[in-house]
Image (cartoon, rainbow, N blue to C red; front, side, top):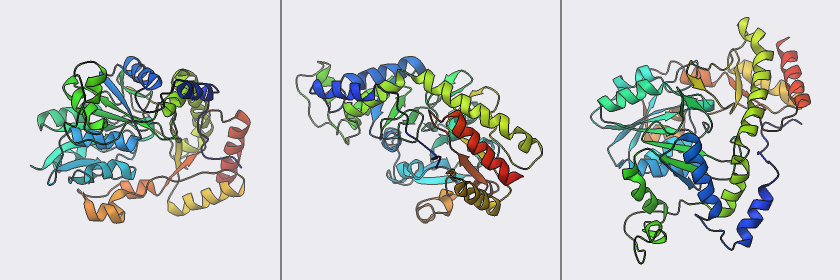
Length: 375
């Protein structure tokens, strides 16, 4: 059986985890956490990076730092993971679901302005499959309406938009280092902060509401509870695991891109004939090969394809059920305008195996099995 995903593993992870244990510093903000922070800041030109326990908690921190509260509204795509909307709901605000573009499956920037009300406080841009949203337009709309912008770049580590790393363009950016992502620490994430004025509030929020970070910098003689917060910082053992992969970030990225490009070349004839649709990369966007998907004719076609691949030992999977049609989406949010593409396009989309270390032989088996279906 060829799995859909295998968590990345470089080979030095265990040694680094042991070093964290031997240093008797396995809680948060140890040596490896700081090295990961430095990498993210230097590599991506980020003003401030803070590792978190997950991409979900990075999103929670971002919504809290935006000051969202009950009665506020946030514009967000419906085609995304539950964490995107949950982070909004936890503040008491309402997610207002916006239709997606069928070419990238990202939020349709042309539908944003008409959805803005006097309650709108933020836009949450989700960079699906590591392909950037149309950020110039989104940032322009946000500036004209005095809105915050949160980038859900959970899938976007190593991707960029017009030369800028995803996650560094909006007010806050959120990465995920879950085992399904290009770089992993098992469970983990990171918050990227654009404005240094938010740094101290973020540190306090991340450290259970205390000014512990200021204490360790020698700015206060003792630390105490100063504001609302939670435990959002991960163990240094998790950071040690991630550090091994960040050191080989380009190697992992190049390997995934090679796999993505092989799929792209193999399926180009089917796309040109109109039998399937394949990922679209807009001009100015550099992607990270987070996933390779194809779109079939409809739900029935996709269901038959998934079963066909399973019968041949290949795991392929669909993706999100649109949030506005979910029980929680109906309870906590609302869809703005017409659902022209979100549901119909999500019903057609299927993801193929793509992970660091997928062998050329296994990838060719995936391609052959797919071609059998289409023949």
